[in-house]
Length: 412
Image 1 (cartoon, helix red, strand yellow):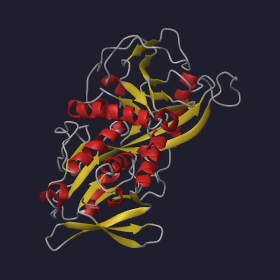
Image 2 (cartoon, one colour; image 1 turned 135 degrees about the vertical axis):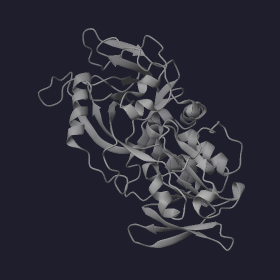
Image 3 (cartoon, helix red, strand yellow; image 1 turned 90 degrees about the vertical axis):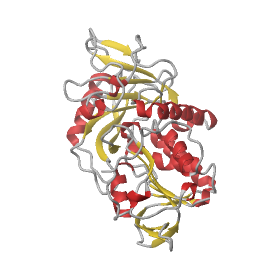
Image 4 (cartoon, rainbow, N blue to C red; image 1 turned 180 degrees about the vertical axis):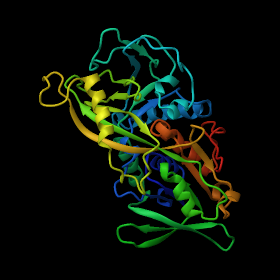
């Protein structure tokens, strides 16, 4: 079985390694991650919201597959206790009855216009009220999920579980290490990649005939460095997103988890997830103006962004600070800034790169190839397991478990 090098050890990379290792010797799989801290961007700082049917037509099949894989993985490996997997009641919260704008549509337009992903959800009516939500007179709660169609996880704990399972099986992790170049054999086919330990500078050649690029928002940069003679580039941009995690006496973190989608004036559309264990995650403040850093984990959170999120927390959950009453005091336990990979079409890329686009040849069929798995936007956690499974099937020449014909590569 062909040796595989996966560039990027985030949620997509570790999911791919996990499913690849079901059908090839785990020691023939190498994960390469350049960031000094694992899961220091979207994989560790995402909301962890899972949906079954909130996707554009091209990703519908993948969404349903991945949702089922999350359920099964949690059932098989105590996911509730290990990474906080639980089904979730999803609601839209408004201070006045909502309009019909965008209801029930599918796709990525909400992402580009700064509105809420709740606009892509089916309207179910009703909806239980989160016990921690601060209500106002005349407000409106609307259910936007049916039973068993939305869930959530703590993404950092899920990533750590998948990585530990990979390592336990024998997958090899190179961290921190960056990829330098690709080499070919006498037949001009991909034969190895050279990596460098970023702490020691030691360079190592990893013989391989298969490469998977799963470097999130950095995938385009990695592709260009690895294949300098490629005819075009990978159409990947980055969407920066700030977040905070708070704790409130109003939420004990036991039963009845909710995902709440709302608005904050005309500024942005907050997303609020009450997790098992007591954490409440607040995000939705996105920007395309924050430049992508050289490596994950190198960006600094903007105080003004954290202040806006804190304002949302104060409005929805109670006060902050020592002057708050014991019933509504909030504690901010984490601030975050991550970068999601986005594509012009608003759907991910899961594809083999044609040799003619690489500038080098690869072995045919399941013997080799260069593969892309990126561009998931805010759906990286939700689509992660399905992506990993289908990518492994594609690379190993097996039948695909989902229709990904609409998730192909269109080079710049």
